[in-house]
Each structure stands twice: as C-alpha cells, then as structure tokens.
Length: 335
Image (tube, rainbow, N blue to C red; front, side, top):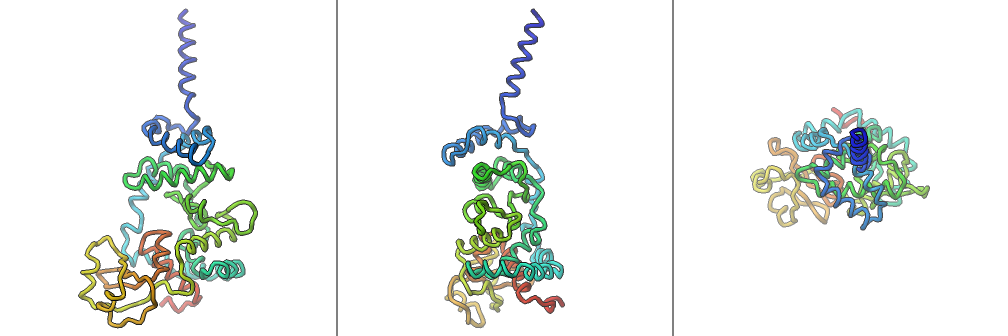
C-alpha cells in the first residue's frame, strides 16, 4: 500500500515536472515572468501565426544572462570621451583593412552602389565599425540576449520584447535554428549587425536564392545595408557632415543638456552663430563632440540617417570618418 502511494506520488511529480516545455534549466526563474511570456506567446500565435508549440518551446528555452545587462549598462557610447571612442575605430589597422576589403569586393560593392545610390565606402565603413568587416559577428545566443533584455531590462524592455517577437518569427518562417544563431550582447545579427525587425523588414535577398543570409552572402549583406539607409531617407550625392566655425559664446546655450550631442538647427539660427554660411540646403544638425575641446561639426540629413542605425552621435561620426578614409585610401591621414 505504501509502495503504491509512493509510486503514484512519483508519477504525479514526474508529470508535473515535465508538463512544462523542455527548456534551458531555468524554468523557475522564467516562471516569474509568466505573464510577460504569455503575452509574447499570444502575439506570436495570433498576430504572426507562429505555431503554438514552437512559440512555447522557444520562449521557455531562454537563458538569462547577467553579462548582457552589464554590457548594456557599460556600453562604450555611454562613458567614453569622443577621442577615446574615435581611437577604438579609427586606427591605421582598421582603415587599411577597410581599403583592402573595398578593393577585394569592388565589383559587388559598385553594383550595389549603382542600384541603391549608397556610396560603397559607406557600406564598408558600417561593416568595419560593426564587425571589423564581418570578422566578429558575436558569440552570444541571440535568443538569450533578446530574452534577457525583453524581460529584465529596466528601461528598454518594450523595444526588446518587439525584437524577441521578430526573432522568433524570423526563425519560424525561415526554418532557422534559434539555438544556433549568435550575435551581439544586444541581439544584433550578421556582418551588418541587424536587429531582428530590420532583418525581416529591410533585409534583401539580392541574389534570389530564397533566403536572406547576413552572415555569409556578400550580395545580401551589402544590399541590406544599402536598402536600410535608402529606406531611412538617405539623400544621394550629398555630404554627411562638414567642418564649421561657430562663435564660442553660443555653444553653451545650444547644448544646455549635457546628454544631448546632436541638435536640429535652422538656417536662421545658423546665420546667427556661424562666421560664414555657404552650406548645402536641407536638414542640418549641430554636432557636439567635445565641449571641453570645443570640437563640433555640422551634420546633414545623411548624418541623421546613420544615427537611425545606432543613435549615438559618436557612432555616426566614426562611420562617417572611416568612410572618408577608406574612400581616399591614403596614409596621409595618419600623422
């Protein structure tokens, strides 16, 4: 009798333990976020027609990563000065590698440039800044990064929930192994480091092989970057930024908020603060790189388009400067 009760108890316990989807071993922690997970699951099933069992299986496979949260808090854009940030990306080695990469892939890059109107050196510059020309696409499971940020990030959980949903849709619809896709700590993927939403909406299957491959297919990689910039409003044959001189006493008034580094400015305002004004028409942005060193630029529409890729002013400036150096292909910049 005792044996029977014990056997029944073990059977019930076994059923209880394995009634949850097979997961990463942290079901107990995931259960704390059951409401959020159910909400995401519902969106996947009803809005995006993802198979219910698939959605549940993926969501309960998430492994939380404290390293991801730490990396978000300590991102170099948050703490570095302009000079330190610039020195990370604008180096002899990276410029020379970019020039060589451009030469080696010239034919494909020029084909993409002709189709989309995005300078080939700009495409290469994005790759140089994002992944060192495709060499470092990330070693963190995208599912774990996005799951951690979607459920645990204090400020940007809404954004990352959307990206988690897009990631699961991407893997479901394209028969991709969600457990074998690796990227950055923030969930960016491939050589251009596209977030899942951009991958789905702006990725391009340029060679029409039935899939968008942002890890290995150069046609898809270059076309996707070009398509992204085009859809975000890139203006063909226009500059990204220019050097300007401003009357010193205006800088503090413009940049009262220490966190703001890029400010939309009108032509009327510019006439008041500039020593001369022979600038191209269209949107203009005053860019503060260093208040201490009084280092600033004037950005045009294309500078703001680059910031749609990454909202950091420093990021947009290193992409711009690296593209200039790749285009020139000379050592004369390094004195």
